[in-house]
Length: 440
Image 1 (cartoon, rainbow, N blue to C red):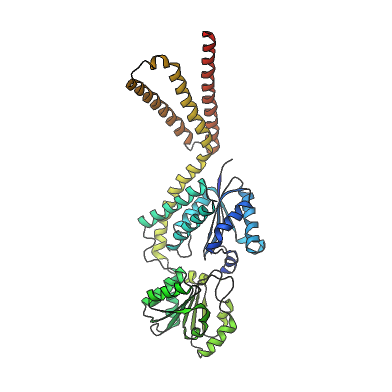
Image 2 (cartoon, helix red, strand yellow):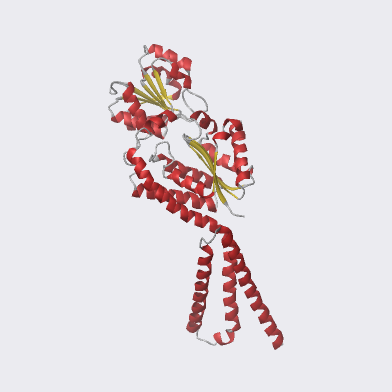
């Protein structure tokens, strides 16, 4: 049966962060999760998992898309301990050519919350590497992911989609400038060392903020980043006394529950005499309790809020995205032809073996005079017959691989060719046996 590319996607377009965070996987969990998913899903031959702040997507190769989709949904519910009803309506099922298109668009950042952002390609490469590590990526996913990487590279090289792109981190900085009259005298606390949080801190430093506090569960990481950015590293177990100094708090901690709650922050706001605090929550799951937004002079924005703010100015990136979509379509045609041709592989192997078998039979039939030729002349005859076989094969295979009237017609034609040629070699062999009997 034909292998189909299948993607089950839950992303920023289909589900709010409150749903996405419940299905999110930490990087270290993914290889084992892939092994569990594959062993629990007989319909899935290959599988990869992409989990970022904006999406949780399962990419699979299967001969039974409906069965595989149900198995993935059941796995996500059980593995993340979330009822199916809580997310199933937001889970998009994408198959075949559309699945390949989706994967290519994700890699080229055309499906990102902020079109043109560069981080997603690195995240996609990590997802592929994790599937390879888990042993759950095979022929189809190897080809699909590498095509996606190629598309992304070509889009970056030939369009201006990344030029002047408004990122989530720069959107956070723009909001900070709206909340505070000036930033130079403000203090920023970076909780966690995620990539986007680090970029936001760098943007703020670039605008003149001098006081930067960095805390992380791994103190060495906090210290290294503090040295690089000119900040102060604070041990994770002792960051709370410093919160009252922070005008801007950026959360990027890997945590299954909020690290900053209402009672704790209310006390801190009172100590600050209700001076404004800007909380930027870049964690998925979220780092800050959503109820913090109800506290006077506390401004809380999560990853979805920042994405909305960033997308208010898309302009030139949208125009460049149209060019990128054309590149996706060109590469999609190539991948679709390759994938649909996988069903031809067994027949093509048989055809190649059969034609080569016919050549070898003819060479054996004439071995009496071939053996009498000088070695150089025998090599020329050998090369001549192999060249003829290759030309015949090329014509046959090129015709089989043409689009024609669809994959089914090609497979049918390949099977006829296989039977004819296999029958031809069997007939030749029988004729040789009859000739030997006559001689006896």
